[in-house]
Length: 344
Image: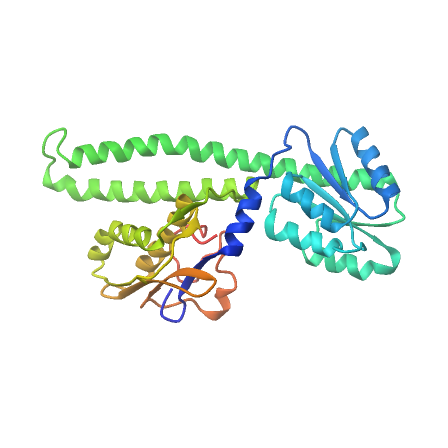
């Protein structure tokens, strides 16, 4: 980061409303579930019957608006949507899924005359497309291919979750024993061991943070974000987290300017998720600011939002890398460590 690359996080009414809508969605994970959206009733029913005979759970919707209502209420593995529909078309459905349901795949249906639209749908994130009139065996094959991808993704997610959970237990023990030894619980440690033990504790703590990043990313990828919104005072939380990094600031001889808007209104936030966001921004600023530099942490508000920002006197983020700032596993060219998950 740097003075030219201030990072800012906003929370507002739209964010809270959207999150509470997602909160009410129930899960349909016992079997693979499909939502078919088409304004042709006979087409909807034909696809539903075919897929139900193959063992899938299938719901239908008569247009994109009705389909989005369904998607807000239930979790689906796959959406099959016609591109040409009244009210909200297939592109509207695709946009909603892309923005809100990262674990859901979309197959679009189109006519011969709108092949260009099919290509555009693929560019916007559709998994596959079918051209009317199509053979139902082709439809079954496309659905099976999509479900195979979903199963592989879940296997990968389960593997990551298992490995990271298994790593946490021994790592926590290492950190605990280091802390006990350094505190003198087993007698005063030799001075020659103090620095190595501190290094072990520091790196174990860093590894635990990486594991927690992987677990959070894995949960987000498989379930989406489910927020436990509470009415919080952002200033108090920011001040508390800044105090927690005081030792790190002292080690690198970094100065800190804290500018908190005293008139800040409370806002609906998930305390666990927002704490993770603030900690990651502070950690990045400390990591990339040269010794003797300065950090500035601010909060503020406008008519629709409250915000906080973290800026520093580090090298900044090159313009060509800023577009990839929040992508998974992306790291800056000057980043020597980390997974690229901190801002994902």
